[in-house]
Image (cartoon, rainbow over all chains, first blue to last red; front, top):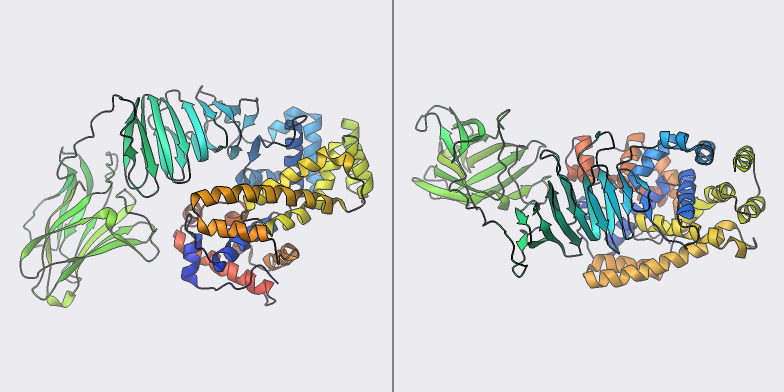
Length: 416
Length: 197
């Protein structure tokens, strides 16, 4: 009997199964999961040469110390290596290169991004799984604790070529002493719960099942996820749980943590050229209260569709101010027969978030909705919306186009 | 080492008997051992994949099994095929890892994963012939579909990264992957695998 039997083929079911971190305790999910494992293994069945090479590396690195995995080349790295040796005769040639000439061997290798404590050269995709340390070319040092899985995703090579340093801490603990990084290319460490962004500091980061924990010894570290981001200063600690705001640990040792910045109200305001104009389109811009222009484009009344549309266009060459968890404030005047309006935000990738707001027709009234609480529609990712420059349009419309035109004014974004 | 490697290099193009390779490997010839790994890994990998909750675990146990095999080569008398011997070690590594992870997921209260690990530990009704049949079904798919499956399930690329690469939404790709899995399931059950994207 196949382990893959009793599988239903409902498409919605599959969506759930593909979502990382979403599990269902049923036979269908288990069968789907095991099928994906089997597919992956079947597709790797022609990788004997690579398997042999990995095993030889392990044997050489563990000689005399029993089986213990030090560094595992990730699947992505294997894919790169496979291009050079997908058939056994080629693998034999590669193995000969190992024996005959180290120079030839390294010529085939991707750039070395860091060095492990045992002297091993680390490349993108390597996973460090045992206690040790890795050191980047600029002197940044990351010490890895026991029972830790840390992936090296990217970094610059010795010549300064390559992307910013990026690591992923799957589980366990690391301590980092980070040399000053370029502001535009900070060191980033992702965990299952969020992300740490560092320009230059000393800190310890640990990841457990439920949360990630950060303790900063020196400098300042940005810690957060799609919901919110906070700056954690020297001497402070914070935790981060998937889908929740990061929390500063109250009983952390006293530290010079700066006060939480007071957000101006509103964050941004729609600055119309002619707010009272009855023309179909009115040009304007959303600006921060300190005068920086953040979003510009057009707003107006689309009488035919009974909708008002704002294009979220990031001004070229001007600083973009990302808006996390903002509240959309708008005043609406809808016909007497209309009792709700719709807010939709459109992403460039082609999906939408939206919400319905109840209103009373025949009078001006304030409507407010938190953007991070909009509902993802259709294909939209099942996560809170964050206003970034990837968003295209904000559409406001009443639910009855035949009832007559609706009007919207005083559009602005407030702090949540 | 150069001489040994060159000798084996020519031998590898011919059929080299397992016993000869074993004898060389026992004498410390790593390349002979590499040939043994190449000749047996598909069986061991298939054995592990049919019983593991993740490809990563299967790969880890595969590596561990071969390292153990290298260390215990002197104890192997060649009475059973090399692949069968390595499978027995792979099974022990897998059981050990599953038990360790079972404790771990129980602490995490991840019931779906815990049930999966339990099912793997139960080890019943496992289809050891699955991988060869699955490979035949994969060969019948369009190259594009096969590439997508490879990127997702062999290389472990994230759905969101794939969505960016394919300029499609993650959910749309999830549906495509689901349909491809459905095609493979039907093929495994005996129905022909058609092309799909």
